[in-house]
Each structure stands twice: as structure tokens, then as C-alpha cells.
Amino acid sequence: MSLRPLRPWESCAICPARRLGLCAQLAADDITALAEIKRNVRVVSAASFLYRQGEPCHDYIIVLAGWVMLRAVLEDGSKHILDFAVPGTFLGLHPIPGALSSHSAECLTSVTACLLARARFDHLVSRNITICSRLAQLAAAHEARAQDHLANIGGRDARGRVAHLMSELFFRVQRKFPPVAGDVISVPLSLEQIGQATSLTSVHVSRVLRRLREERVLSFRKPRLEILDPDALLKAAGFEGHLESWCEGSLPRSVFAERPIM
Amino acid sequence: MSLRPLRPWESCAICPARRLGLCAQLAADDITALAEIKRNVRVVSAASFLYRQGEPCHDYIIVLAGWVMLRAVLEDGSKHILDFAVPGTFLGLHPIPGALSSHSAECLTSVTACLLARARFDHLVSRNITICSRLAQLAAAHEARAQDHLANIGGRDARGRVAHLMSELFFRVQRKFPPVAGDVISVPLSLEQIGQATSLTSVHVSRVLRRLREERVLSFRKPRLEILDPDALLKAAGFEGHLESWCEGSLPRSVFAERPIM
DNA sequence: CGTACCTTTGAACGACATCAAAAGTTGTGG
DNA sequence: CCACAACTTTTGATGTCGTTCAAAGGTACG
Image 1 (cartoon, rainbow over the protein chains, first blue to last red):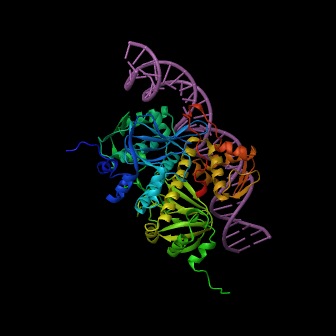
Image 2: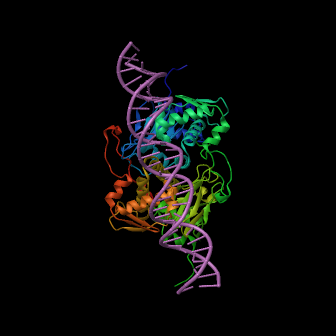
Image 3: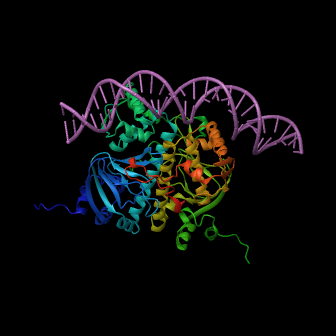
């Protein structure tokens, strides 16, 4: 048996993200096309940046392992986490070619990232309609997630926001919903970061988490998130489908519209 | 001269959205391809729905004239406006084929809409890489806008949120930024709707607008928005580029990353 | 084992919400 | 063209959820 290292495109077959995000649903020849333009796979340490707000972003990135936060700094210095990236998430899509990043991508843990050089990937996308179409779908899923966050922050109180965030993270990490009592996942977030994602202070997040623990809804002690009462969690997070007459007949928001896509 | 009515694809050449949104930057043959699958152009009255939350959305829609709000109803009945559509905006892109709409599209004014049957457009997109790629770009622009709204609601106080919203609307309607003193546009929103877009009550929006008027920043009396002091408006809306040392070297969020796309 | 950071808890404050009522605006039909 | 009803906007008084400030535990890591 040869012990030579795998060449970049060979490793795609055994990539942990082969069935996630961009690569999910791609046929072997499209994976090969991707593999051919793949720059490399890198492991970067926690707290490093994949790209920075205000700077160009030279690579598209597929997160293979670890957690990343997409964070923007506002003019007054406040920081806001727009989204988290978990394994399978595709990063680096810009609304305009050559645009500067509107936010930073900062690693919450050590991260394994598959880097695709921007120019080469753009060129591939302009020739490969399967990948192009998948990309449009991913962008639409990201839009839907951003809108879900918008409704969460705009429309729920502190308890609901935190419950909703935890539900989303559980779903995205486990790709299973709803959870059952006793389910546990690792969520490497500080209270400060949960606060920046929910527009609350870390002090208040602490109080909310204590209350959710006392109510035996969920238990979070970094980095361990345990679901104690799925029904109560879904209710707290706003996943109760109840039709109101003054809703003008519309149904409640579909829970995780991006489900099959990640 | 013949007086026969224009056939659907002939009218694209003189369409008010020919240089906006999806159709911007498309060459004549791609426009022809689009025109061939175009279902029709309809004028619908204010307060009608283009699609409803919880229901499937049968058409892609290009707004040719008028204003639309994308609004979601939460489980507790609160309503949140996720985005507005102005002439040129492309609507109906879903993260999953066949997904139900997560929000409703409700007309704020009489709206002229170009309808593209979903199945036929999807089929066109799967064959036409120019259009597919443009679609991905549009979706990315929508994502960026949703993130901008997220940062706005999550990070600014009432005055900043309203100022930011008004700035965005000015830019999207006029495609010019920044405004100059005396610029006036029509913004057909009630205070209630401004509140739903900024997560404030209409009562508080009223107070904020009074203050902005007294400060001679802007004047809004439905439907007339007049910019009084562009500098003060930009500052209030958070478009002041100042680098903070503890920003970790990142620049402030790029203002309207979606600029050339609408 | 000490230093730096994160989390928890309490007390006081404040921005925005809620409640209520008056004034203004729009649309409709007589 | 007026009158009336329905809705929107404005303003004041009061209430509250989450913030801010402060200080005391925890916890992790060199």
C-alpha cells in the first residue's frame, strides 16, 4: 500500500462536508470540477479571522470542522453577530464582485476550512450551471436565515430570542428537529457572543439562561447545551403553529425553510 | 403604422425595469429568453397580496412600479417587515424548491408586476448560466440587505434605526447616495409600517420623526420624505466611517454593498 | 498558583412600550 | 360639496424589560 498523501481532489470523496452545503447533491463530476480548483484545506486556530470587515475576501470558504461567527462592528463600536457557520456552511459570497466584506468571519474554535480561490471559483461558476444553481440556492437559504434572525431579534423578548437561537444551532449542528429530551450538543459560545447574536447584554443572557435552566427547558454551560424539555423549548422559541384570525389567513413562518440545504 | 399591441417580449425593451435588478446587465438574447417565458404583466391594487405566508408562491415577480412590503407574522401575532420591494426588485426566490413562503408580499401601493411562472423560470435558469449567475448575485444582495437590517435593528437606537431606514429607502428609490439637502421622494409608508420595519411602535416612530424634523435632519409626512440635512442624516444613520482601535482593525460596514444591483 | 477572563448576582436607571384620548386625514356616499 | 365613519398621527402619563454599573465568585491557562 502506498503511503503518499491524498491529492486535493482525492480527499473530496471522504470530506466531512461531502453531503453538506454546496457539495451536497453534486454529482461526482461536479465534485471533481470543484476539487480541481480547490486551493487547499487549512486548519486555523480559534480567534483567527477567515476574512475581515472592510477588506476584500480572497477565497470562498467551506467550513469542514469547527465554528465561525460572522460579526459586524457598527459605527459606535457595538458588535453584532449576523450568523454562525458550522460544518458545511459556505462563506464568502458577495453581492458585488470585488466588494469589501461587510463583516468579519472569526473562528470560535479551531477551524478546518476548504479554501477556493475566488477568481478560479468564479470562473468555474460561470461555466458550470449545476454549481451556479446550487450557489443561488445557498444564497437564498442564507437570505432566509438572515430574515429569520431579523424576525427573532425584532419580534421576540429575551427568553424567546435565546430559545430560538439555541433551537437553530441545535438543528444546524445535529440536522435533526425537533430535539428529544436529553439531547446534548457542544456550542462553543460565551454569553457575550450569545448576547451579540441576540442583541442582549451578556448579563441579561446569563439571567435568561438561568431562568430556562430553572424552568427545566434547557441547560447551557459553555460549551454544553442540553435540551431538557423539547416541547417547552419549541414553544419558547416560537415554533408553535397557531393560526390567528387577524393574521389575514397566513400560516406561521415555516420553521427552518433552509432545512435540506444547511 | 400598425397599432397592434406589443407582444410580451417586445415590451421588455421599453420596460421600466430593463436596467434594474435581474434584467440589468443582461444582453438582448437573455432578455429575449426571459421574455419568452414571461407569464404576463399585471397591475394589482394596494393592499393586495402577491403571495402569502405559509402558502406556495407560484410565480417569480419583478416589481416594475409601486411598493411592496415583505411581512412576516410571528406566533404571538406581531408583524415584522423584513424588506421593502421597489421598482426593479426581484421576488419569489426560495431556499428550497416547493417551499412555502416564510412571509407575505403585500402591496403598499398599486403595483405593476412582471410575473414569471415558477416552473418555466426554473427551467430557464437551469439552462441559462447568465441568468442563473445573475440570480445568485441577486440572492447574495438580498442576504446582504437582510444582514444590514439585522445590524440596524440589533445595534441602533430608535433614532438611528429610523434614519437608517430612510437612508436606505432614499438610496433604493433614487439610486443616488448620499442625498443633497432638499431632495424629496415619495415613501408610501404609515408610521405603523415604519415601526414594523424597525421594531418600534408607531407611537415611538412618531416621536422620533418629530425629533428628526425639529433637528432639521429630515421631514416625513406621509408620503413625502424630504432630506433636510444630509450630513446629519448620514451620521444619525450610522454611515460615519470612523475606525476604532478596538475594532480589531476592521473598517465600518460597507454602506450599501448591494449598490449596483438594487 | 496567579492572572486574566468569564459568569453570576444585586441595585438603580433609562429607552421604549403601553394606555388613553384628542386632533388630523382619508375615503365614501348622500 | 358636505357629513360621517374609519383610520392615522400626535401628545401626555405611566409602566416595564433590559441595560448599566459594580463587585463577588468561577474557571482556564500559562
